Length: 149
Length: 149
DNA sequence: TCGGAATATTAGCTCAGCTAAGTTAGTTGG
DNA sequence: CCAACTAACTTAGCTGAGCTAATATTCCGA
Image 1 (cartoon, each protein chain N blue to C red):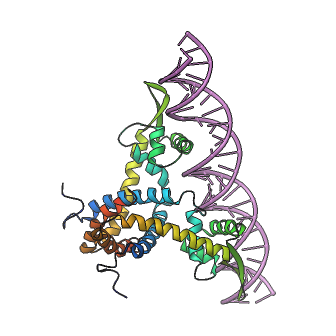
Image 2 (image 1 turned 180 degrees about the horizontal axis):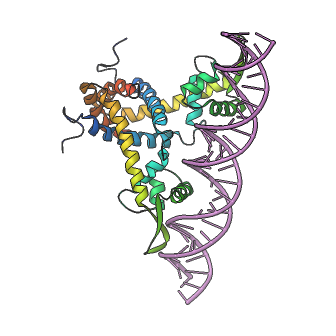
């Protein structure tokens, strides 16, 4: 068996690679679960707040972006509204449309949680060698392409 | 702005890299959600079945491995048992311990779902260039190190 | 104008996580 | 030796997050 940290050409067979990617995905999912447990917002709530950072959005947009059905997003926004983190508005051009935007408290919470998450991730990354970080940085665009078929 | 597909040294600053990794994680989570929706087992069930492939396990072991509390695993195993995919057993040496093992149907289901997942992932990977696959393969051990601090 | 399409919500289900409390079985100290 | 403690697990009851089906509202086009 060759050193997995320096795979040569030929180890990049799609079938073989899929198993490795699958295992790593499993690891990352478990890792994310550990790091997001017990935070002041759930990871879903954090993700939705992040979608609102640039300004108000429509319910349909939010549902689509997060790959959930509209009723799911309705309930999610209800919870965030109850918590005072978002506010619903109306579209003056179309009375069917509800808009959602961050409250001041919502924006503050978003920034705080993001800060904490990035700090933790930054610590993990700082523990790597510079070479490993370069390797990882090179792979990010590739990972971003997955599923864009 | 430099081409993000060919980061040079210096872009591997932990703080900057953290934001990129964070964005990619978000993408992967959404991708996983899309690909696991509507399958014959949920992703959690699939994960638990995978833990049983090598033989019977104790409840405590399973809970620890999946980073959940024991009651959560009890309910999960109840569902899998109701579905006929696993069977509970006893430890002859300690009557407090319940063991869990795959049924024939459970093993068949595990293999079928794994097959489908790997095939789909393989397709995504086949759409990449060989160079991209090499890049990805090189990054897998690095990703696997994350969170092992 | 009226019927269909679009937008959103409500209702009711399942899965999956949690804590608190209870049961049964092993372990240990007086 | 038995009483108290610990360990392993389950039950009960909560929340979050997803789904479909059904129900308003509103818009738009024939």
